[in-house]
Amino acid sequence: MYSWQTAACVVLWALIGQAAAGCFEQTNCTSCTSYSGNYLFPCTWCPMTHQCHTSGSLYNDCYRHVYITTPDLCPVEDSKPYNQTLAAQIAQWAAMAYAPHTKIDPKVLSKVLRDQLPGNYKMLKIIQRQCDLMVNYSACTVLVAMSHQEKNIIVSFEGTQNMDQLYEQFITTALAGLANTRIGGQVLFYNENLQKLLYPCLKPYLAEILAAYSNYTLTMTGHSLGGAQAQIAAATLVRERIISTDKLLVYTYGAPRFADVDFVSIFDKLVKTNWRLIQARDPVPKIPPSYYLYHTHGEVWFSTPGVTVNSEYVICTDNEDESCAWSQGPRLCFTDECVRIHKNYFIKDMGYAFDEQRLGGPRRPNRSKLGECDSLDFSEI
Figure 1 (cartoon, rainbow, N blue to C red):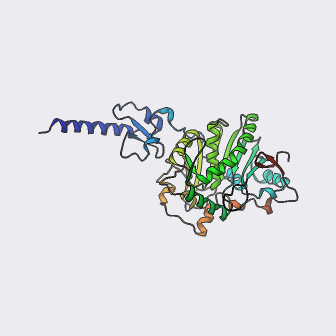
Figure 2: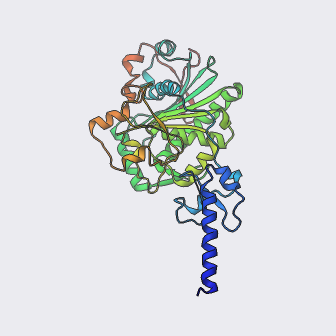
Figure 3: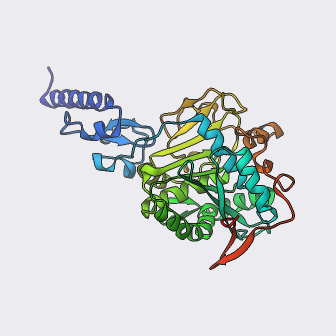
């Protein structure tokens, strides 16, 4: 004969099972946190896996402090669908950020932009800061361009320039770890240090342009390290109300993990349209490991290396989606072929697509100082 304690346990487990089933049926954050079928065991949304669970569920992979429990805390949904033709066009700007900027002939650049890049864009400014901490290498760069035809402003962050800079990133990650950001959460120390150098130079200039062209969209991009920097800057610009999330697009290529779960949760709530392109055998998106750093939302997965405008792709659901890049496991490939794959997103060898041979000439851009910021001004060309 069953005791009343046993009966109570049976009833309790029945209630838990019913609550879990009701939560599991919810497919988005709003419906999950608004679900009224459970009173004793309310539903919570995990933004990292995009799944709904009962509060305290053992099957919830999220840290407790990033659970979402009310609809007003839900991340924004992607407002603009992924566009592969647009991604291929923006990739050229991600490559342009690697150009040898002090050696660019403005008139040659103007011709290249007019003849080879769609949209009739005009380079406005290239902002540079000396960013080396231990090893001497060239200044780090962010460029700004605009198209009145497209009613769009592009901001592109330069990726890793050479092995010296890559070495410094590994050393600072090992020694310094993470650093607090100005909007909450933490990112890798190297990324935050670079953001502290470039963002104060970029913000006032962008604010001035966006005030003058308030109906224009803003596209943020970058390859590799530049993709991480573009995402940090994008979230900060939204949080500081320099741009509305409805007018912001972020397209990045082969970007690494760079942020903790708190920053990723903040980012996913702030930035609606974020597309992270990752192709098979690219080692960079797998580093650092996922046990303490995470990707933002919006993965676009190419299971066949060699991304072209006609490549097949999958739009992934989770930040660390087991059916996308994560399906290849944590094993890293740093052979010459895998490094070459990392450099090729729509463009062969993004770091050298716009080199001195292609953009150089007798003239040089006008240099100016914006406080501590070096600026190469193309706006008068």
